[in-house]
Image 1 (cartoon, one colour):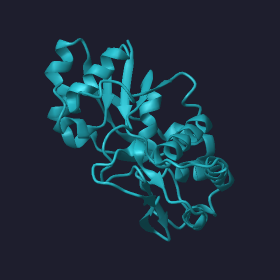
Image 2 (spheres, one colour; image 1 turned 120 degrees about the vertical axis):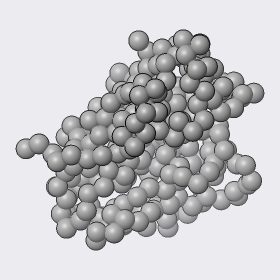
Image 3 (cartoon, helix red, strand yellow; image 1 turned 135 degrees about the vertical axis):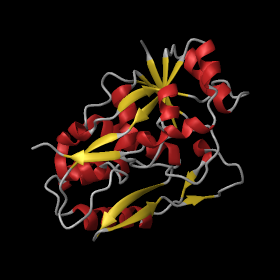
Length: 251
């Protein structure tokens, strides 16, 4: 059975994004789609018990611009601000150096495009958590650009040899599940589950950047990932159950 997932790249994304790598056989970058409001160029951090966003500034932004066409603002000021915000948020965590080394490793290379910095941030975290060794990475660029939405995702899945298409619960709003099944591809959704970890003078949230659990747990951050795949029919009957939930971490 080959499990394929297709996702837009995101900036140092939350741990849930890496459940796609853990559960899938093939991960396909999906950046030749319109840039919309989301976490493609921003991510949550928690500082002094307050959740806030750090955002990558873009330049020459156009209407209906694709993620793959989005250009970064050319200066180092915002990079320093992001680094300082992470230091403020995570400096007391026992594995802070691991987290900041991942961050610095991304910026040791120069970038012009948002998708490149996002993909490298994902790759660096995957490597640290040993998640990328068995997952094949692909790219949707040039694949069925004449199609859109559910039809394009199905066509990409077929090209990649999918038996199962794995996605987050947003797909419930637009995927043609019956069409996938007629074409021999089952749709499964992630049922997000995480083990909560202890934080110093802060609050726990599963939605913050993955650099947060890495700073507190090091490589054991992977052990907090307890999500599973469920069939779309079950997902439709238990929509609220798909949302991220945390349990107390076992000692």
